[in-house]
Amino acid sequence: MFRSKTSLILGLAIAGTAILSACGGGGDDSIAARVGLSKPTVRVIHAIPGGPNVDVWQNGAKTNLLNEPYKFVSTYRDVTEGNQLFAFNIAGTSTELGHTTIDAHTGHKYTAVAMPGSDTAADVIQIDDPFEVGLFSDKARVRALNASFNAQNVDIYVTVPAVDLNSVTPTFSAVAFKSAVPASGKDSISLNGGTYRLRITTAGSKTVIFDSGTLTLANNADWLITTLPVDGIKATLPNRIKVLVARGDDESQAGLELVTQPLQ
Image (cartoon, rainbow, N blue to C red; front, side, top):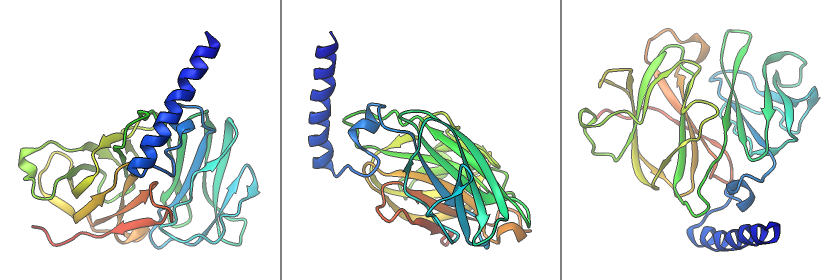
């Protein structure tokens, strides 16, 4: 029984490798990740507009992520199972802005996001992605996070560009400040690769407060869409927001900042 089960997994892995190669899969789409056997991994994101550059520490030791600016998105880093403490310090100092402890499990991918908190501290939000992805799927994975204290409950629409918002329901409904949708511990939603438009409204309204214009979402993409106050921690105007997209499919892992386009 053990031998036949092992052979089945090996056969699926070989077939999956061929299909992923044909459809351009890569990066975080390893076979081990897709069958839940990969080491736990963690990435960190600096999402504090106007915030200082940061050094990232892990379990009390400085990592090689040093002097990283706003919009920085790291690659996923292998960690061991169990508690992993990640801290964001002002670059070159022992002054901590914020930290979070991640309880890491095999097969899961984690994201630690430093977001606007106060003048002297950051809020650090963690997201646990079980990464339950079909072996042969090439769909993109998308999740939203609201880090905008000046827009504390928003609906987020990811649609084909010409869709009338009055005819559709939100892709992510009532995303509260400091919250992710789907919630941490649940899988990202799956979308077909293609051309999309990202629009954000206050929750329950169809009045657009952010419009990205046309975007391209690749097959096998892994996006975290984070709303942020345009003016950072100094923001005073309600609903004045922008978006930082962390793209797990992008080799550079750079954060893509989007500002609202003229409403159409």
